Amino acid sequence: MSRAFVKEDQDEVPPRYELPARDDPGFPQAAAWALLEGANRGDSLGAEQATGFRWGDPVLRVWVEQILQHARRRGDDRLEQLAERFLNTP
Image (cartoon, rainbow, N blue to C red):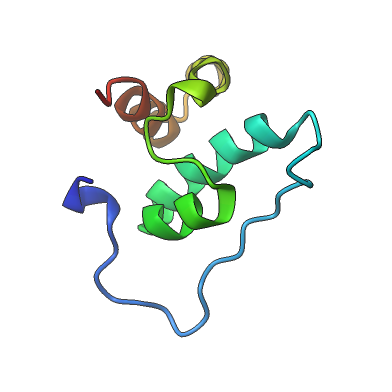
């Protein structure tokens, strides 16, 4: 895990990730968003724990590719950067 994605100063209240039930068909897409959100907040480990997926998990690749396209359409450079890093994780 890159230290760029780990927040060293812990907030008093850990971030919460709004996710559907794990058996919900939309869970993988929501998990992909949550992992990118966690990385943006400096809480990659918390997002991994909340979703059950690890950063760069190939199962989420299709969803992160869609998020990348969304970020490019919106001109969201930070989200684009995070999605590209996720997709480039070996």
